[in-house]
Amino acid sequence: YPDEIIYASATDNCDLDVTITFADNQVSGGCVLPIGSYLRVYTATDDCGNASTSTQIIILADDTAPVFTSVPQSYTIECDLDLVLDAATAQDNCSGAVVTVSESITAGDCPAEYTLVRTFTATDNCDNATLATQTITVVDTTAPVLSIPADYTAECSDAHPMDDASATDNCGEVTISVVATTIPGLCAGVYSITREFTATDDCGNASSSTQTITIVDTTNPV
Image (cartoon, rainbow, N blue to C red; front, side, top):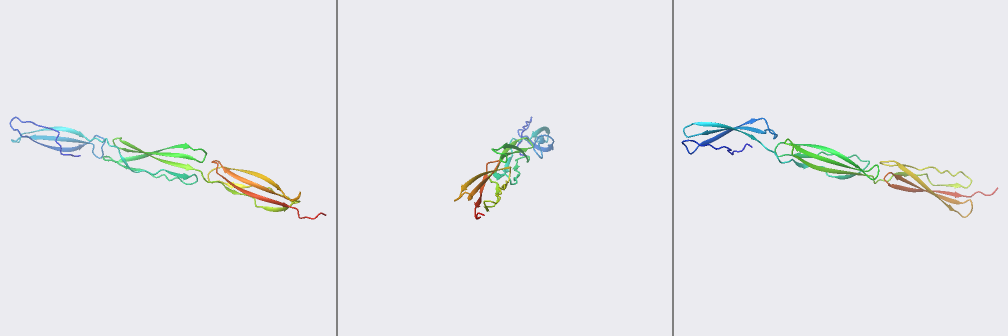
């Protein structure tokens, strides 16, 4: 707008043809930006120059919702990485668009995992709105890093330290379990112990490693 359509008609007592002209003036009102309403003044003039006027208020309508020009893509990310929260953009045919975002979080199967849904709403000045969503899936697929005691060989009469293992995880708590198995040797004082350590995080990711302790008897009787 403005268009050139004349929404008025006129008749005259003498002339068959009456000339109608108009002038538009911007006035307040309506929701379309930057101009929502016009005051149109029509002038009907006959061949002798006699004229009359009439006014009309034209309110511009906008019933077309904005269109998104860009929406961040959904993605999956490891739990120890920073989320990328990009913005969405939209355009409107009449008044421009304002984009807002709301977020909802759904817990996953373990503490470190969840789903973040971002709902974008593009709204124009006439309250027409369009929705779009982005889904960010946060997962924990990384096993803990396990550190175990070193293998060693000891005389059967010496001390046999059973040191603990340690572990770190990228996202949560770690539980360490150990299974010790004794394998007999060729004589009573000779054997070996295998200690299998398993570190498991809250999401069930696990890593294992084995320590071997070899016990020997190389000392002659006294």
